[in-house]
Length: 222
Ligand code: FES
Image (cartoon, rainbow, N blue to C red):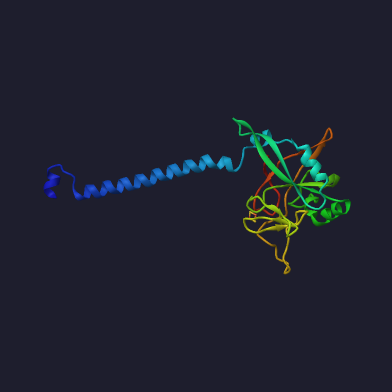
C-alpha cells in the first residue's frame, strides 16, 4: 500500500473516501430532487386565490335531468354537467356531477331541522348560499371524508361511500348505528353546492370543500 501511495496509485483509504463521497452526493441529490417535487406539487394541493376566482361560476343543468329530478320525490337523481375550467394556462370543459334531491315541503322542513349547521352562521358547517330553497338540494359528489365518490343505495335508502363505508341519509345527514356511533369515518354530513334558476333553467355551481374536516372550508371551484 505504501508502495502504491508512493507510486501515485489509489490506496484503500482513497477508495473508501471516494465511495463515501459518492454515497453522500447521491443522498444529497435525492434530497434536492425530492424537495423540488414537493415544491412543484404543493401549489396543486392548495390552488392560488386567482385560480380559485377564475373558476368560480355556475354551469347549466341539462333540462332532461332537471325534469327527471322534478319528477323524483323518492330517490336522488345524478345531475351531470360540464364546467369550463382553467389552470391558468389551458381552458377546457370538464365533466362533473352532483346528487340532486327533490323534497316535499315537509321534507324541506325536516332537512332544515336535521341539518342546522348549514343555516347557522356561527357554525363551522355553515354555507353562505341559500340551500334547500324551492324544494331542491344538490350535494357535491365527493365524500367529505377523503373525496371518494359515494352513491345512492336502494337497499339502505341512503347514500353509501364505497371507500370506508360512511352512510348518509337522503338529506345528507351522517347516519349513526343503533349504539349512536357514526357509520364510517366521515367528519360531517354531505356538502351542498349552490343551485339557482336563470331564465327558467336550473344552474349549479361546483364547489370543492376541504376533505376530512368537521367544518366546511371551500378549497376551490374545480
Ligand atoms: S372517502 Fe368516503 S368514507 Fe372515506
